[in-house]
Image (cartoon, rainbow, N blue to C red; front, side, top):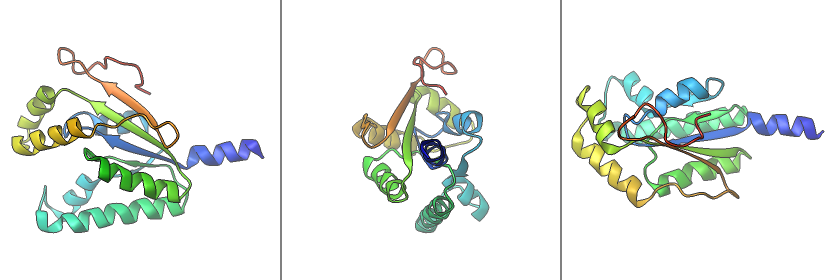
Length: 170
């Protein structure tokens, strides 16, 4: 019975990505979480034919929540690929995952602001939005809470932004 229980727990994993836009969250998800069901607000926006439209954001996030809940009802491993720069937002997703009995992992892709800004220039991502999110994350960084979730902090060096400074790249 313990073996089955452990298998179920492994299947019921929720991974919450955290990081600035263009920090490498999606790259991490694609490389290291291929068996997880991906929920990504950018994909929903793309499906609506917009990059960002304030009027549609409540709808986008309602769809994100509905997708997460539907996947958790089916006990699928789920990854939310979004910036999650505000603690209050992370707490909302953690509470939902806990209500479904999921184990929770936060993967914080900590790429220097200057590197994210350079990458963002390539597709005209607004500098003001990047700076706002940087300030949010600096004010509310993920902190270890082993009784609630596992925190994987992947910090990149400004000199070598493609290589992590710390272990944890799983």
